[in-house]
Image 1 (cartoon, rainbow over the protein chains, first blue to last red):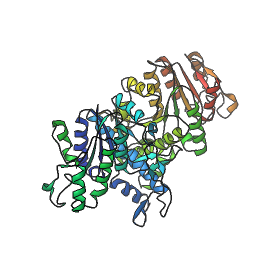
Image 2: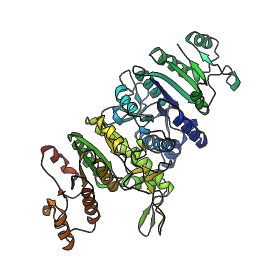
Image 3: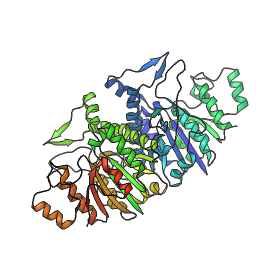
Image 4: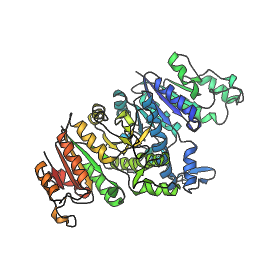
Length: 262
Length: 262
């Protein structure tokens, strides 16, 4: 059976009209699906209203205990539950989750080397309880994950949403024919980053190597593509990198964005 | 099959040691179970830190849009997900929910008569999707509900946790042999409110009428007991009103608190 694992980032969440349209399109998407969402500006706004300053060490964001509290409130509460209520409005039987719920995603607190990242969780190949998530899918629920996991010892952990999405896609590929979709603000991988018309429709591993050698892929896109090809190597059928506004094309069997295949 | 629907209030949530012990006892409780929790002081603290004043009309608390946002963050995020993480630590496969998740509890926004209560939801006999909740129980998940529901049209609604617990117990009584348990700070219904030794072990409908006539039941306890007997009339097998600290007695087949039966 086919399964979509779809990730949306902060720029979709921050734009109320865009988010609304995306959720409508997501609800209408046929078949099994999982949504993974990141944070957005509201967490920063709430932190600032509460007088909590962003902690940065060497330019890296640190999740101290105060930040974790805000992130838990905003990601798992405000953003996640309002998304679920909207999806229900559009007839999608969504159920909002962290990795602690159902023990679905168990992470390890990032070890302190040169930087102590605080309450940040890293995933490994045993993190995802795929069969347990499958029970929800089988019961016709649509899991909506925010970017929080737990360590199994009572501690919630802030975890990168891109990583959660690819780990879910890989683990569930053992049960379903899985497509991983990263939705962001651009049309996909662009030949020229300033020209939305220069979309590259499809990239295989060989083309990817060429693109890297020719330095056509932007530095921000590199880790996304590396993750994507790693996911494909680990059993994910295909990865799409595209624009949230174009998700609806999937229902017409049209493609959108950049398709990555083995 | 037996099912416990257990509600804890703010005074348990506000006391970290007591909450911790309660969650451990709850996790160890054998059989199917559902937890329903209220808010606690942290919502008021966060509201105040964010500069949101409590809105009261004629002494009644109003849920305006700002308050709803805080309640969504605190109930569904901070409190609910930390409880779930603790329950998972103790081996209970908890899954944290609002009524929007899975469309499990659909409410109607309270109509404006003399007071506009704001985003407050009222339940009716069709509010609970018992079969759908049964799917989670059948899959060995333990639902943990916070005091939020939705209207099915995208709007989250603040809803009394006592009411949610009794509505769940009544609706699920069609599938399970249901016991409803209200955990609060006292040992149960007391003959003398200042004497914890004066616990009334059991109350039937007739005794209840006598207690009301003799004005032995305190005014604060009256709505709880009215709700309890209404739940029993609607198919709930028994209702226990007791102290959170004594929940563990259930595992030894001992009783605790005040048992209400038809």
